[in-house]
Amino acid sequence: MHRRLLLGALALPFAARAQAAPLRVLGTGAVAASTRDLAAAFTARTGRAIAFENANAGVVARRLREGEAADLVLNSASQVERLAADGILDGGTRRELGRMLIGAAVRQGAPLPDISTEAALRAAILAAPVIAHSDPATGATAGTHAARLIERLGIAEQMRPRTLVFPGGGAAVQAVAEGRAALALSQVSEIIAVPGAVLVGPLPDSAQLVTAYLGAVHARAADREGALAFLTHLAGPDGQARFRAAGFATG
Image (cartoon, rainbow, N blue to C red; front, side, top):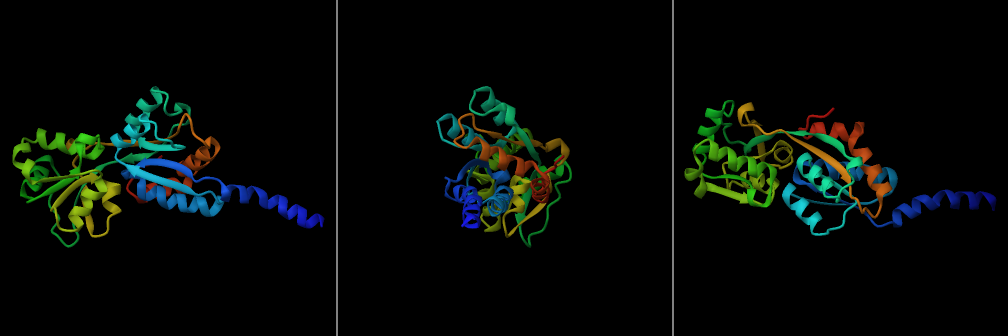
């Protein structure tokens, strides 16, 4: 009898976690693939389900400002800093997940263009019948940088009718994988995650944008303890190894 009571008591925390509402995580496309993999491992270990949604950096920030509920937010450092300053995120919980570069992608089997210098990158963009990137109008990190870079390279007018824009970088890379665009400019992690697309390489230093991605707990998180536990998992050894595999620089 006592043994049954003890076993029942030990099972209660696990049952409670299994029955709890999923931990709500809102992040960007750059961290999506890694976060989903790490969420599965976290759930297997703790029994706590994760409900993960992603959008580009600007859309994530807008959704939070419009009142969307979340327990944990994963976004670019600049967006996290602004959201913390506005009291939406708890700035004291910020943890860096890694730093990401922007790269170029082509369809698997296509010749790899030279993008080793800014001049070579300019030529590669001009040679592409159609290019793709995320939508700068929505605040997408890679899309905003790509649009500004093309403007600075002096080829905005030539490329405007030959550019497809998408809500997120993953969709832009998917357009390359499907043959709807010849070249995509996106976060390296988004390129690696799309089957049928190949990473040509990161943009040259003079054309590069390095973006740090942070996690922070929502100031009104329904489950602050769960959010902190998952953030610790993301920033821990297993999490950092997965982010490095996705192309992030960590540590």
